[in-house]
Image 1 (cartoon, rainbow, N blue to C red):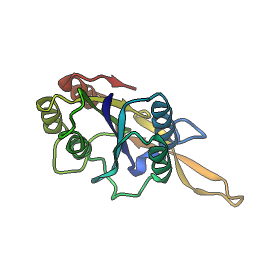
Image 2: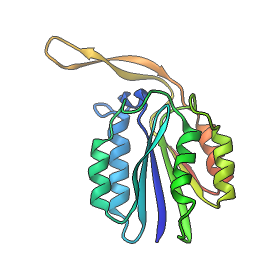
Image 3: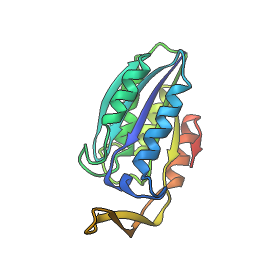
Image 4: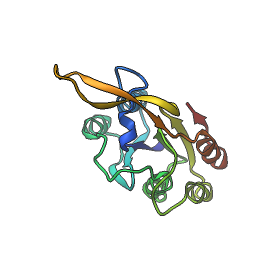
Length: 184
């Protein structure tokens, strides 16, 4: 099997409702769940990140554990920001001692790197050196998007357009440098 670490962005911008009425976090979690359902002999781990990164689930074949732990992932659980380089590095740390023939990081994010102490380019260099492919998935779009601004008197969520920065070129560069692919 393949060893795969899924790194999911939990920054506040993941509340944006590009997929109205669903937000980016809902779509990211749904995508990860669907991906996990397609695995049989691959060990999968989970890293969550925003301004920092944390290893949430170690590499495991227990897919039900991953889906249960994924249910607990929510926006704002980590200090805000988007530390893409730190997320990749934390994922690499999980994979570096793996003896699997193929090792992969799948990075799901909606933004541009704006936090962390390791640059995404340096993290991609580390991945290349370790022969770990990084696949990037850009969730959402840049520019003005509906963002929750509170509740109305009936308890319904009110949305206002907020401008969100994305950096598809950065995600494409990371994927290309490591032999992975970039998706939107």
